Length: 333
Image (cartoon, rainbow, N blue to C red; front, side, top):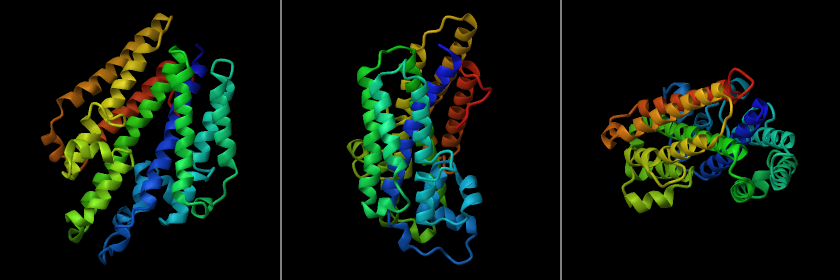
């Protein structure tokens, strides 16, 4: 497999997963009204006040604070939703991600099932016609639900018709690495916002919708309730999203899936196999760190050091993929 093909496949998986993650996150926080009813205390620094805003949290969860503020400045519903969905100047907006995925699928049409091109092209053509404000006219939930339907269709076709060869494993590696980083970013943003909440909001009734939104952002609310019932707390949610072995969007599950697909890649060149083994050892090391985590570690992690470390390690995995398999010296997000 040519390096450029491996890179395209890896980023097809990442871009489609990223599009779904963005839509899921906006859909949930669009209807989160709890924070809007609270007044930010006078004298709070501007940055802290912005962190209390639900729209600022979304940008933080996507890791785009600096890029957003340089372009828009303040956080408003209209600007944030436009930036994340249809802003072509944003390298991580929905329309940009889908366009990049479509371009990569087009370059590999002879190697991929034709159904993948059909759904990716259809998804892009549908999204390309949307204008700012369409999500409010046709119901935000329906608009972002349709985006999730498109990505689910793509993933369903990938799972049902692709041979379990290198092409499939590279797409899945990209998907699960992206999922790992997304879950960690959501938690990191939640921890930061939680520690910045005013003291009069630090009660069960006030913070319940906020914690619930964190779980719904990854479609984990119902599964969480099965394990923890009414035990809502930051520590319980962190334990669930990091260590749960069966929830598909937990860090534990995503890293094990990444390890499985990484091992499924078959290489002929000895030099590549050596570098390939090195990446596998990186993933194994990260899995071992997770295995050693206890709930007490998460309870003491009020500043998000655990999630920050895991997020940095996941980013390094992306760099290692680029150095091993791709033409460029570093991965382009």
